[in-house]
Image (cartoon, rainbow, N blue to C red; front, top):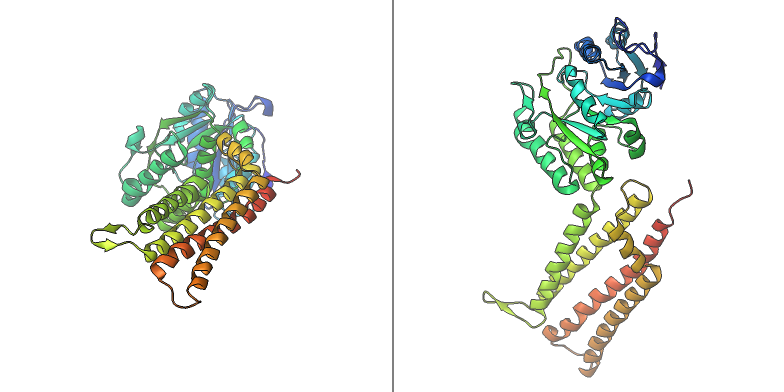
Length: 408
């Protein structure tokens, strides 16, 4: 990362309130940039005007991600500080800019003139009140305004509301516009979150982690204007970035990706056993050995998902990706390695016992034909218990390895 700053501490072309030393800078406005010559000057000028009008001591920092259209020269001419970020990607550009920021408050926003940087004081006021993250909201559900032609219909009426509802449900984030790129946060929060996403997921990761770590989040309404760029189309790709968002949501939530489906499959399998073992008739159909076989598959798949959930949450907690869950930690301490081995061994032996009982029935029949409706009621549970016990023993070892962590 290379820093190009022809004149340090410049926050406006006339060098008004931010011509101060670094320690006095309260706000850094970070704009990621990749060939934004059409609109960059407008955005920088608006940010300068907002800071000057409200007496904010700050700077505008352009995080350039390899522009070849004169964006760098435009930024420097308008009094912005330019940071060249070689690693490609929206997240990389923002991380490069944020890490070079001098303000204790940081506001990020795209340089396509869709966000009105004259609204900066609203974000600063909330940050001064003590909020760690101040998220803009363009949607009417959060008091925002989307001007005609500013957002594709699919994004406005389906994608954005759906993903915003999901982030509220899955992570209890108190926001209504997960994709709004205009937001403010403290430098302390950024350093604490250890964000890792290098692409479009960067902004979503910030919201999710802030919610998981229980920081103070505020939402302020903002207005979305039509994209002012003419030289190229927006960088956002609807279905690609929508899938990446969904994928990231699930990867950040072992509960929704593993635990909830796992519990559902295990419950479905247990219900099948409750009906299949006694041979219950349901709507004229007799639930027999085939029901038990399908139920065992459901239980095995569900148990594997629960194991994956334990692995994922243990790893994420150990690596600091998500905060520690006291209830999960207590459960891990209760089901420690030795206890897991004992439980698994008991289940394996019980399953083996059922299989031996089935062999005994076969022996009694002179190793001839068996009545499978009866015998399979021993064989299927036996195989299932043996498999579950075997998996429990070795998964306990794996969790133990994950909990060892690593020396830093």
